[in-house]
Image (cartoon, rainbow, N blue to C red; front, side, top):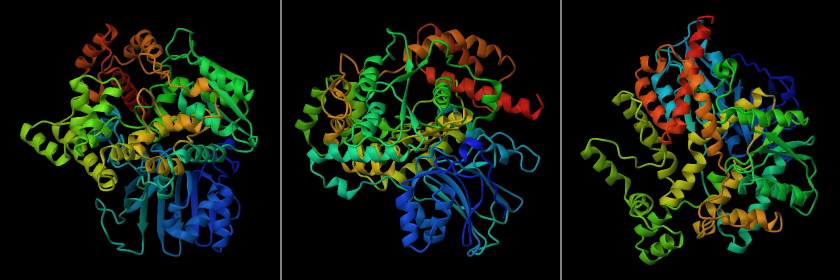
Length: 608
């Protein structure tokens, strides 16, 4: 058994990932990539249990927690973590990844040994022979659906999914076989999205205050004493983070710098009025990040080559600019509002529950009060969600072609052409994982959607990609909405608090009354939702930049050689996009990113 850890110097303070050392607590040895929150409470609990951690640094806390509680420690830790622990007393290796997947963990079995790493790249070259590309893993990158698989872009290199535990025991069944090897990693999910019963019993008028308190704790726990930065748009989520931190009765203990993108005044992404209103309310300066010079596809060959996942992140250059701006302020921790859409929302598929329950008048009121009037809306958001999945699956078998009946299932872009057996295996694995994590624990349609939005690996993949590129810029990214206390609260509250006619996120906005200016939390329905999406900004840059990126791919496409993509159909759809047909635009960018990544990997192996 060998453990090792490497960090950049800026990551070694206790308030970030902690010292680059192997932590020990009795027979337990541990290495980690982690930020642990509520450290004082956790330390006190450990001390009461008879094990005083050597410090409150993440590695020491985690080692003590594994020593005292074993695998059950995962029920007590609030944080963003990936760790590997060796318990010499039981000769057991434990590896775990937190439920929201900010930090990654990968493993590979070779010649009777199991290797675990924070990134896939060291595992690829372990024995000097780079494994072939895995078409299944690459297909998942192309469709942005990691789902129920552990596959990566390389055969044999596997990703430990978020909220899962990997265990290898040398005491139990030491001769078990794994692809001819002597060790069998056992992997199981240890976390399922669940409601907090105490929060479910709260009266409706107490819910906003309870949410504000939990959000305040989630933000404060993620800000070290030296301070942090907040990436703030004018939307409800990131402004709520500022309101939670600055809007309490007591002054916040640590500084929080406000960063925001500056867009052209006429751009739909411009939300300066809301950003300025929050800054004025708390007497804060705004550190603007200019966007005019930021390209959509602007990333170096080295950045492409070393990213965690082939697809990367569609707004990589902008997020790198935010991270650099935080670093220039002298802080190494950056917060953002990712996760608010997942946790504090009311899916309109609640109409499916109303239809199932025979509440026709309530369904009619819900439908009309929100301005819906089309048959397609009723079909997609009321009728189809109400139909039992076994019935839809039976229809699917009779028709002989897929019905996209789960929330993660979408039509394939026309240029993505995988073999039927590969696509079928992906659907089977994803449906099995969805059944175990969501269907088995939630009966109502809206509960299923809310649980899925809190636990699907697709959202964790986005967080991990953002974390990866921010750390490459010397900054650690943290997501207060991806907090177990927020998730358990949100799942406990009734759907009526999450959605009101003509309003988005009413419960979140109510929680910020007297904390944020009325202008910021007021409904923004003006013929359409005002969301600050950077659609037009991205489209303009895509049109001007795509030619240069394609010219770099004038050699045969590796994705075509693997049987996954038709470049000719891709070119056809791209031509239509540039002519004004914006369907599939995100997938167009993602496919290009995956192909660029593949060519960089092949070039690196060839010494280019």
